[in-house]
Image 1 (cartoon, one colour):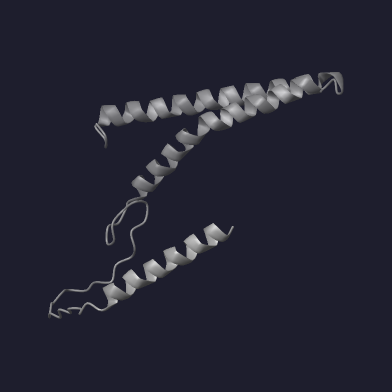
Image 2 (tube, rainbow, N blue to C red):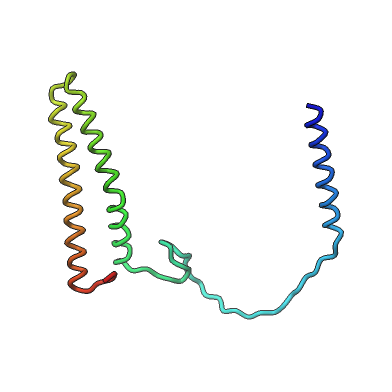
Length: 132
C-alpha cells in the first residue's frame, strides 16, 4: 500500500512540474477583423444542416421508413406473446384462441404492411418519383 501511495505522489509531483513548465512559455494572440452575414435560421433537424428545410413528403417518408424498420421486431414480439398464451392452455382453456389470434394478427398485419410498401414502391417506380 505504501508503494502505491508513494508512486501516486511521485506521479502527481512530476505531472505538476511539467504543467508548470508549460505555463511559463509566453503565449501569442492574433486578433483580426472579419465581416460575415448573419441570418436567423432554425437549427437543423432530421439530419439537415441549419437553414435547410424539409418537406411534408420527406417527413412522411421518414416515418414510413421507421415503421418498416420496427415492424419485424413487433412481429417477433407478437409471435412470442402468442406462444406464451399457448403455454397457458393447461390453466385457461381460452388461451389457445387468444394465442392463435395474436400470432394470426401479427402475421397478417406484417404482410399487409409489406404489400402496402410494395404498392407504394411500384407507384413510385411507374411515376418516376424520388429514388428512381
